[in-house]
Image 1 (spheres, rainbow, N blue to C red):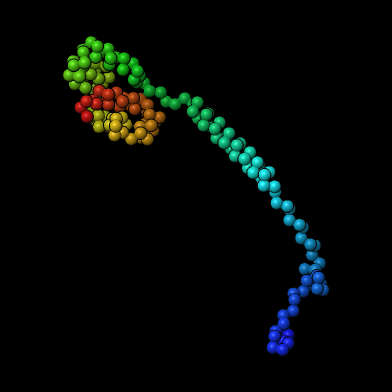
Image 2: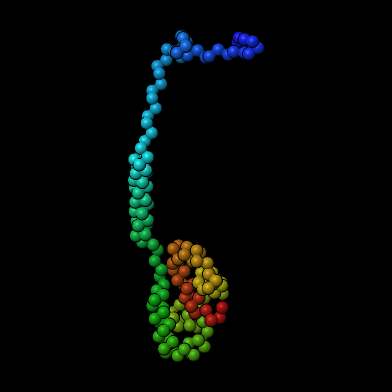
Length: 158
């Protein structure tokens, strides 16, 4: 570092332009950077990738929806028809005067336990948990259907 009139002067770094003969001068020059991709091409490529991924996801959803799930052994439609016939036979007043346990026996089902009566409110009715009901209907459809019938018969006592 040299000083001239009180001002320090720093020499420029040695480069090939200024006579550097070290290893930096002998190295090959760096390859020019690739030009940036065209924005429109990049956008169209990304859109195509997204469309392919969405197509694969949609195909998987459709395949999952087509898989047969567990079936219920309780036919709630048949029970509804039997209930309507029972109401016709007994009359509305006679049907609702009959205790719920007896009505379930007349429909061909075993009477509900007190635990089932409490549990049916969790899956059916105005204060039910729809997420829990949906999960139960998928995992144990027979139990879900039975609790639905229990709720239908015990609705007026809850």
